[in-house]
Length: 170
Image 1 (cartoon, helix red, strand yellow):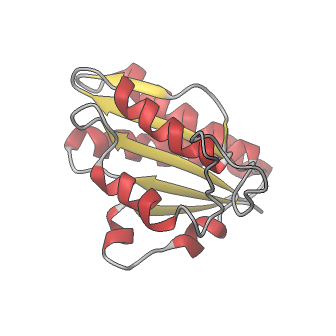
Image 2: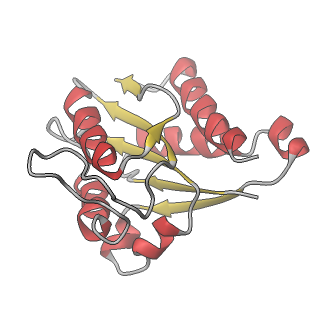
C-alpha cells in the first residue's frame, strides 16, 4: 500500500470544488477494488500552523499539489510548504540553480499538479515545476490548468489526476 499526500491551498469555492474532485478521483471505486492507497488530505496551511512538516512529505510515496494562481505564482501557502521543507526532503541546488547531484530524500517520487487561475496559470505552473525539478520529482502528466469558472471538464480533469496518482501506487 502506498501513501498519496494531497497538499492543497483551497481558499475559494473553485479550489474547494477542484480539491473535492481530485480527492474523489483518488478513491474511485474501480481503484479501490484493485487495492488500497492511503490518501492523506493535508491543507498547505497546516505547515504554517505547525501541524505538518517535512516528515509528512518523507512518509509519502507520491504527491498531488493543488494551488490557485496568485499574481502569476503558486499560493503563498504552497510556497511555504516548499520553503519550510526543501532541504530536509532532499532539495539541493547546484551553482547554476539546477538540481544538484546526490540529492536524496524524496527524489524520483511521482507528483501531479493542478493550478486554477482566473487569468493566467502559467507563472504558477512554472514556479512549482522549478521547485519540484530541484527535488527531482517526476510528473505523472502535464500540469492541469483550469481557467475561470469550474465546469464538468475541470472537475473531470481534477478527478482523473487524482485517480492517476492513486493508480500508480497500487
